[in-house]
Length: 359
Image (cartoon, rainbow, N blue to C red; front, side, top):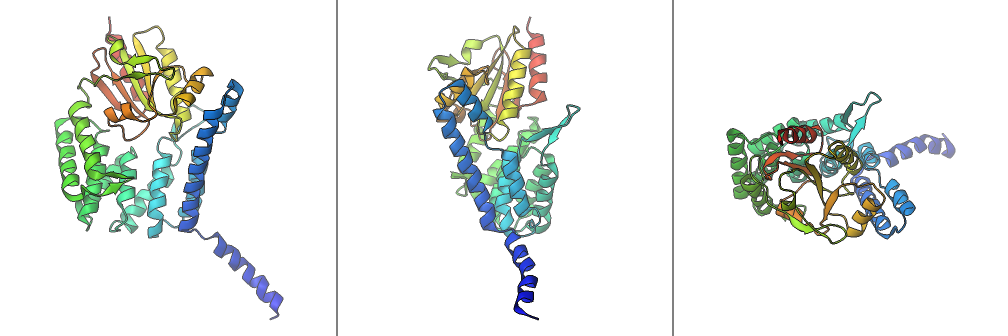
């Protein structure tokens, strides 16, 4: 066989080898997406005219497209341990992304992919020493199957420190289910285990002990039936704003930012809800952690139609111990909490019931 024939046979192998998934490629996707978000943030900040702001908003990096690129890298390799960290990134960045069908129904955009990740954790990585990132990604993933996996890890993983991280994740997941005494008892048990076994473990620069402390604060002050703490600050024009000024009104308190993966959907449904309740005893108040300049731009061009605390340094968000954005509280006229969780239909249903009670 001549030299040319050898090269012809070798060429497809080289292509296949070059197409293989790798940790470096997965890391590059994460970095490129973050760079795109940072660049977009700067463009929004420097936009001075309405046309520039509209164009910049339209150029927002596509979280779904980045997730698809990541899936191309890890989807066929989920049995390999190196995929655990990028799989955690995938779970975090696809949370809240939905696809709307022509008939108006919606469903999670990456439901099958997230199912595949959960299955891989159970079948291939259950005993891995690298599960901490995936545990916290599962904690933010509002699916009962994620809770089931976290509970298995906290009970049966060979590393007690990872057990503690999983227990923390399970406690965070449980707060989305309800506040009945049995659930509350379980949450406290998991938080105690997290503190005892994993207090010094770091998750995205924060210790498990600090996260668990915040969760204990939420149980004490920010669960259903508690009177929510007042918030006082300023809006994007530096005018004073507070929750206490809205006594007697139902309050939809939304913690959000334009960098949230599903920001466009959150803005759309919040604007629609504010329009629906216009003229009734309900007010939508955001706590926004974009720059004040960007928030003013959104309000100037009509993208954002509700009042917002400007909270670029997350000081007000810290008062409510917000760990996952977006987050909504529905408060009655006395600021008693009736709902805490993700934006969506439950927010509107709860608000409708409370408004109907006001004479």
